Image (tube, rainbow, N blue to C red; front, side, top):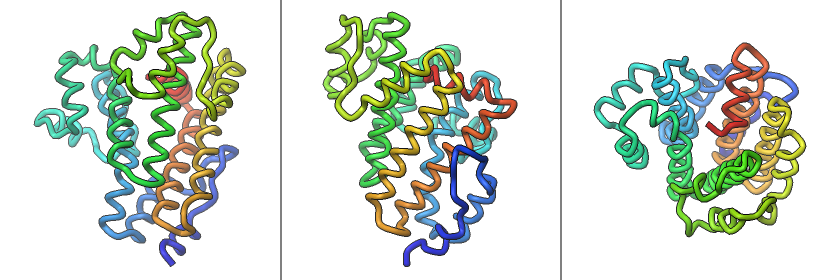
Length: 257
């Protein structure tokens, strides 16, 4: 039966309305229904939030409560160097907080590369999708701002097929996206003057990918638990964006910072 009762107990999710349960209630339900090993695996889905919380800490901003670590643990981890290797390299490369904030997109790119290498199956496909989505959006923004793509991707691996595809167009006026990603360019072009609409359209694009992965995953499997959690984070992000923190959330999504 897998996670039949857990998944049936969770409410449906849609961008049309906030989740019917809080994040704390979701975590409690996961804790009660998952093994310690599976719960730890689910917790890995919040590691990107932990990264953004480190950036918020450097900038003196409030932390996203959905991360795995609170402020005390984040400070301790940074102090003793208890961080993943890719992030330790980033900290060494940029010793000053203002440098780290300015180049934070590099840390996120390294995070997705590591996730894609370590994960398998559905999650590997998700992180591959997210890494490429971020690269393509960065290229579209760069073309709009007339920035050199070689500068934008100077810290990426030039041998990566997606990076190589984009760098081959560094001197062109327009930017073509790889086959299968045409919809992302339409989203960008149609909404580039309206950040809020851009934000929602990108979230809808992510949800479409999750629905595609749901169709490929086994019913009531742990993979479907992972996908539900990812969908929950996206829907809740949109709900938060409608509130007092909306401007900051939209800027982060649209600017890729």
